[in-house]
Length: 211
Length: 189
Image (cartoon, rainbow over all chains, first blue to last red; front, side, top):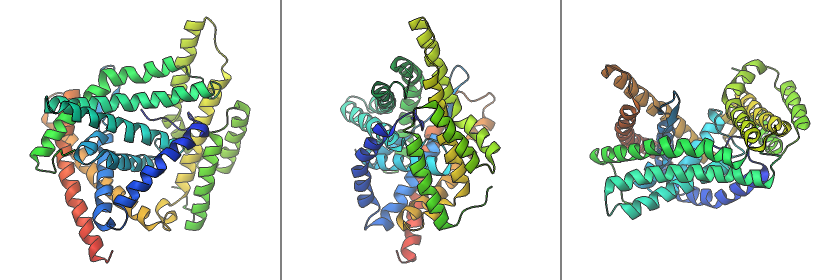
């Protein structure tokens, strides 16, 4: 679901960094500032948790596999903006220490996977939880996956529109290649995972879903 | 493992890499990208074959797969093969950035290079240490699931197990965060 390095030109990647910068600055001031002794370890461990959740592979029909994202959980347990900060750090660690993802597209990926997806999922959960909590949690996981994938497709389609010679892949191919697995498999898996994980986290008497 | 650059040299290499990958990400001409690829091979010739294999595994499946899908789609819908050069440029661009990234990260001790930013260093140290600790628990849980089931675990088994292990990891992460916080306070932070 990541945008890989080399698919987005600086005409888009730099504005994405600019959009992320105030949110990162807010997050750093709030979570890594004066009270860092309390909050820095929390951000570090939650980032590690999100990273480890993303290494859990789920086999899907057809011989391939998908991986969980888990950022939605952080958004539900804490706040979407803390989830954004943690996902940005996950992307940074993946790019710098494990050579995965990319540093030029970090802003685009952080906005898509760390902000837009979890924020949409969080709003879906807020809207649905009064009718059914499990349905709200499933919707949160499913919606966050669809919105994040759609945002990635949107960024790539915008790059294609700006300069087809730079990214010649037509939007129809991007949409099919990314949205079909997301709608049929990855979203359902993420939704089920969100329901299972949240119910067990609550049973473990960890901090509950407070919004 | 390649020898690691001194912190100051490492910082210079990181800055050059960062500027370089953004510059390469602006290129769209296949010939210019081929020239940059040759230059990168020349600059990072030590361990180049291993890095090339890693790049081929990590980068090329996505760019080459999408390019092939696009070519076939345009052939079927348009009736003619589209020009291949933009696709070649896309694959080259992704490969050059991947190769430069893997080469530089092999040559730099990131934590020592980031030392001038103590907050970022502390955050990365905590994160990396916790990744190793939590990964062990996750791996053990996955192995435990495999040994308990008489058949190969399916998608639902693994998803349910992931939910269970997440609760354990959350509890562990919260306890570890408290321990780290206490340790930092004891050291005068």
